[in-house]
Image (cartoon, rainbow, N blue to C red; front, side, top):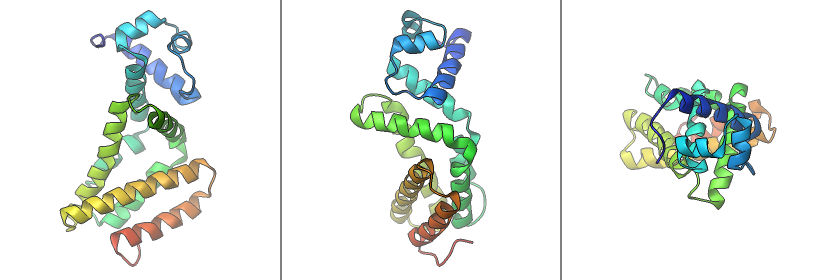
Length: 193
């Protein structure tokens, strides 16, 4: 159980978010994290309960710094056909300014696969938010619920794969072309305009 919100708690959380965006979380101990943010283990545990809770919350704070990603699903509620809206979503995800968050996301995901109890809340949210947002768009456009859900899972999986390629150094324009072709195939369209 963590302490109630306070100015100091918010300050520490912001500093931890800065730290993990710059350096990642691999081999990060509570002690090294405390030193990096000018605190101590006891205070971090008081405010956050555990290192895992602290990193879970700091990851969400980090996400808020990348509005192109944080508000992505809300933008799918805009009017318009799904193809262009999903294309715009991919361009937001792939924006160079979002790379620090993408690196952190995949690092946390990798650690989560080895230790499912770590950052479990964060990944429960991630696993449902994007597919639900995409499915909502597709249902609004006339897809039945089952097809919308299946297509949404495929689209989010496409995005994840393209994000890995992006971080590995693939040409963004090649990835954009692959996205358009794959998206058209998933949605059963001839092209994405």
